Image (tube, rainbow, N blue to C red; front, side, top):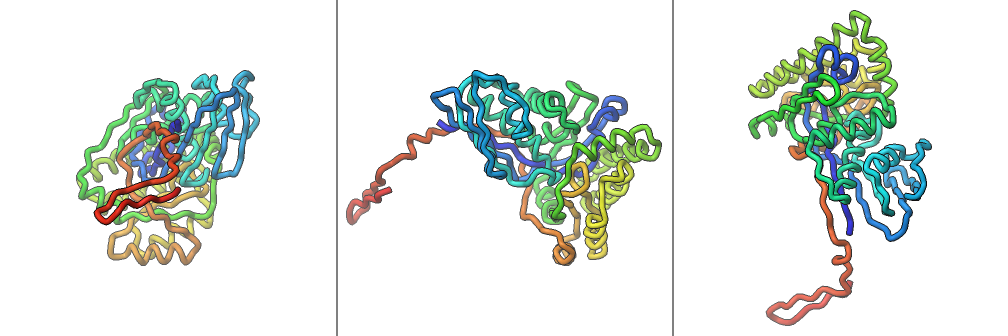
Length: 356
């Protein structure tokens, strides 16, 4: 038997950073975003002994545990260690992890991996968790148990999936508002967006710590309030189908977000963004906390090819993608039934047998 969990990565359009305490607890945060068809995967194969063997396919790393010993954080795949502790895994198994984007890409990779892990483990143990319980568990394991600085949005976005406007007022006070957007608008939005990898990864926790330290500074605080207001404005324009307005609001949000921390951008990111604007993009933003990862740019369809070409000329790497309207999923499959010795099929002329 193989148990699998698959969780989608996300892009945030507006409100990023307002989901981080203390701002969200004192002022209330709001984020608008969607999941995309890039995923984190977790596969679990039960064993007959007490050994847990974890394979990170992206890092070509293997870590082993014994269920009779205490799980210890040692800097090697601590996300998995924390998930094993949280789900009280007492049986041996093989765990395989893989993600469609690198850490620090701005697509919420670490939190999405956590959601995929917990989803597969819950499926294995027969535990039913609704969306809010799953997202809160993932938040607690990553932010509290492991002490990784960050906000709430990634866990909730990956768990619920699709287009959401999410409001944050602290732990256990998060409201996910699914957005009913016409399919034609979704198709047109995706057609007008470019996702470009800057070539750099970032350590989001360091940037978020700097943002939190700036919370009491007036300009940074004003910027956070403006970013929150823009999330509401972008929600309204997206629901109305005013996509060019939506694209221009992305630019407003990016200019405001840069005031929240000096670590959010760098000369390379600024060059990519400025060249995209010169080529005809209406607006865009760096995804995630900042410092690297993916740029999301909104371009009218008749200049999109020019923007794409220019961004590649200055070092950007474009990624093919689409929106994903489903959240985390888990399932089981029987690997034993795959072990056939041969396959036979009867055709009108004769029987055919294929040795495997």
